[in-house]
Length: 230
Ligand SMILES: C[S@@+](CC[C@H](N)C(=O)[O-])C[C@H]1O[C@@H](n2cnc3c(N)ncnc32)[C@H](O)[C@@H]1O
Image: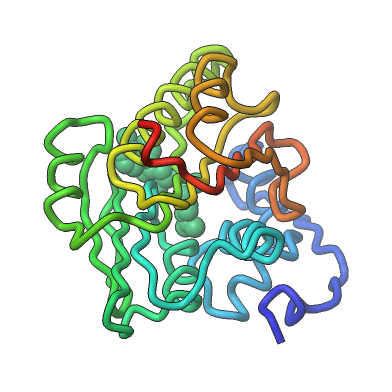
């Protein structure tokens, strides 16, 4: 049974009666966490974040994670996606390699190489390339900059991260490889979408059920990398 199928039936809604000194926004956040079925299922199944279910859903749709792959997970903390990758790829197989990178420190995951650094910096990209033992089968990015509260600035910052992730993927992906990245509603911006279309056989935009309805995030899944044409 897949972890998606193991998800439990919904429990009764929890209402916080007392604020106990919490601010209105933290009260709202706590209430949402307590009533979020994905948060409950992540805890029950041992995932570090509810985000794990987004990758599970994407993989159940596109089947890009397979045993014995070289995978790079950008924006990996706290590690929900990395756990899903490790489960599907099996880091103990001889040709497997899983690398996770984030600005934040992460608790270890068996068989995974974790790096702490800013992906926007050249030295971090060089470090990743030095660790890679060969071309990557998949580059995934769930990177999201912390919100400034200004929609347009946030959009611009995530667009820059997606572009950086894509140019990195172009350098390290194997022929036929896959690139998955978090983007904002409306999908990948025009210019980069055209380059993506030239570089991959198929491009799909998906909003997984586990992605909150009020969030403008969605994912681009680009499969069938055409290395020869780069
Ligand atoms: C939504 S979280 C990722 C959740 C993760 N996929 C999981 O399943 O647990 C986004 C992450 O992107 C990271 N991030 C944002 N900008 C980054 C950058 N420039 N370099 C590396 N990581 C970055 C943040 O620190 C944050 O941990």
